[in-house]
Image 1: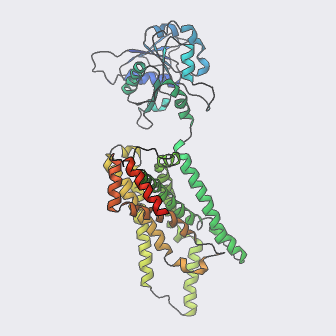
Image 2 (image 1 turned 30 degrees about the vertical axis):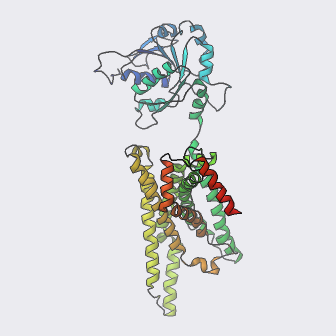
Length: 469
């Protein structure tokens, strides 16, 4: 790539775009320079060794730092903070120029101030803008097709910030205004965070998985071990295939529970302009991730279920059942109620899994960006609740009347599938109450901007207090 001549994407333009200087000839500097050349900009690299141009695009000019900066109104510093010292000597040359800092740190809170603020302090004659640090050299090379296109931009000078945002758009990326330069520290920390929106869902999933797994081990393996029966082989398939559906259904319900809480809070307050509690805000922001983790567990449950017929223990149990019928000369009768129950259980599971997949597909950025808000809301809300109903029904039909059989309560511990029904049933009951026409109409009015007057709020609270007394 480095030796090819860059062909501008806007070659039909009559006017040539401005020249941009790049300090730094590393991977990121070269990739950004190539992207700028393709977008119709003239690129001048500032280098300590102007004679070494073997890796740089041929269409770019290479000069010393001072000479390169003099020719361009915008200078992009594609260097690490440790190499900023030479910029102090260019203070006069940088006067009035836009200095774009693209650096990142190795770890969080590595320095007391952000790199951009430090750059603004050592080069006070220039206007510093923080940008491009959230995209990688690979993302620039791939044209943003297979990576994030979002670029955070911040600066104390609005005019300079808008100028850089225009450059970001010109290279095919999406700028997001993050405000003043004090936001640079937050922007620099962003690439260092490992899946920030996935932490709560993953911790929740891990905690539920451990608790349910231990519960199953105690109820199955430990209980049978006390009875002098070794069923330790259940650890590999049987117990995981109990854990996956239980955790998956709970996580799916947790995706819709915060929305129910939000509606109740809005009804109570009589307005949508009051901020939700922080815990609820955080919960609602990670619903997509919760759903995808739940989908992955549903996939595992489906796969583990498909291998059941080829398991040695299952085949052995089936053979023993046939032999026992032969020895006792008894044939197991065909029970129609059991057939209906079994087929209903499987049908609900298959349909629930199908809609599960639809929810997961529409969560993908490439798909969600191609549908309008109403279509997205229909899938994630209407079909989402349908998925929850089908999966909850799947678990209920599986359990059927087993909760009435005392032998299932080993050491007085309820069957594990019962725990998977608690939160989903709470969510569905609350949702049924919220879709009652009079309640639903009030929620819609509130979300359209209607507010209950203060006097009515006080009157409602007084009535509630009187009823409580």
